[in-house]
Image (cartoon, rainbow, N blue to C red):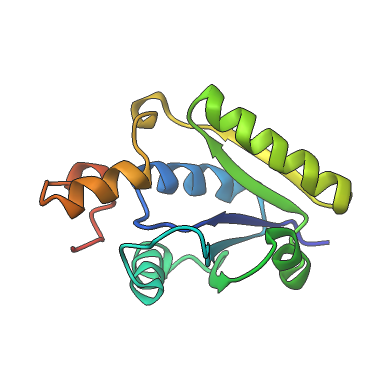
Length: 152
């Protein structure tokens, strides 16, 4: 049986923190899906096609990685792609509390899906897509927070 995992997020934009979590999760699984969630509540700065392009530029040569956008429940998308694991990066205790609640709700509804939390590299604790978007939106230089493959 293949070990398939999903790394969900909006990746608006993908940051070096996201890349660190994805890179560290890769050796654990046979197949790793990067799911670009369509979140009706969040106002995206970058179009979905651009975010997908960035991820494909970073990971396009890696046969273990698949990229797809999805709507609805993350657990439903897991069932669609055959993933039994959801990977989430944790930067702070606030992240942990939020992600723990989601993981417990997912487990109650879908007992076959496990959430796996990876602690972020301490150097990336302050980096979030929200802050990076604000830097970009206000004309700042966010290049140190995003992968070098991303050209804004």
